[in-house]
Image (cartoon, rainbow, N blue to C red; front, top):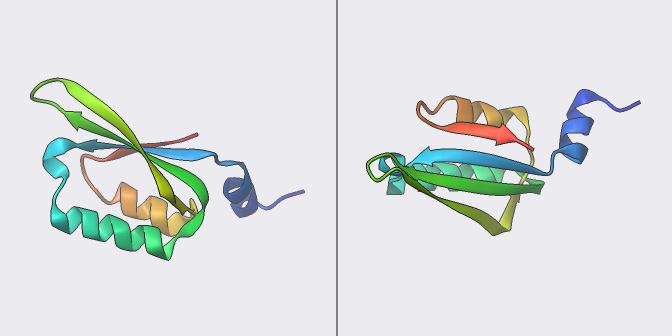
Length: 88
């Protein structure tokens, strides 16, 4: 029997984050980087950068930054209006 926190830590393969292009700024990147540093782990972090104006998107993933899908990191993503994420 595994605790729920352990299941999340061991079974989650990736987190895909949908970010509107207009949301990206130096401040946002800095905040996100700080959250990643605080929540280092083994889960792949993926990004879908979405440009609503041209109706296009680009899929990116981090090669050298992996995170722990802890409540603190997920709460940070939830606190950002306009950002959606999916746990895989």
